[in-house]
Image (cartoon, rainbow, N blue to C red; front, side, top):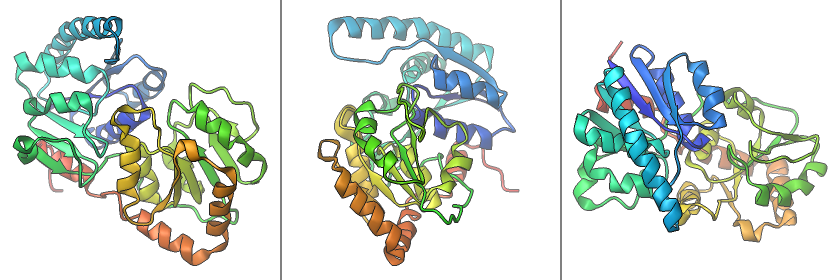
Length: 334
């Protein structure tokens, strides 16, 4: 079967797409995404057919809207050619700017099309496309923003971006700071003092940040091997990041980005922390001393640490891949 996987823009969209791609390698997979550094570095490694398009998101202002429409129409014709050339049977989208052109093209091509929503509140683009999809896969059990008439299409699958490795037991209390694949200078700079206070700490600056410190690395491609080394993660509230730390049972300090549409990271964090899986700190309330107190408490209180770790491990859905493949008609019992 020929399957088109659509994603792009940031790790939060791309990582779950890659996870699914690796699980359906017996099929002919075609990836369609955006022309970003993350995809240029990671998608070729999958050894599949792929297409990376130039795209622009829908932003405020007449000029930005006209640019969006220009790329939407331009890529509409490119997508039709790709789907016909690759003889695509089924499509699944994981967000990203390319998805708009794919939905538009599929109005004419009528392929089975599925959508995966990573966040607890459905994204603006996905919300407009609900009537066009066969199924809507959700990362959260309580995803909001979906009209009642489309609820029959909703399948809680969880997020494919989880790790099947185990957390590594370390003698040191290793701390990781990560602020998304693109990085966040506003948070990273506020947290820099921590790098001199704890010997076993690492910060992933992100591909857009240029922070100079011996404890800062720009980006990590092999997170499945890298993340299990850490005992505490200070992170944004991207759905994929929450899913990955949950699969390893790592306690977290969550600082949601206030700059995202619908404030969805804050809502992700609130849902994730509906039981004690970590700590929530708003960006405008970052206090290094508060964070130090949390770190020291988790480091020194074994029972508290184990409680939060066990709670964290209950969030992700180990059956995600099976659910998605079954609903798409791709699952075969061995």
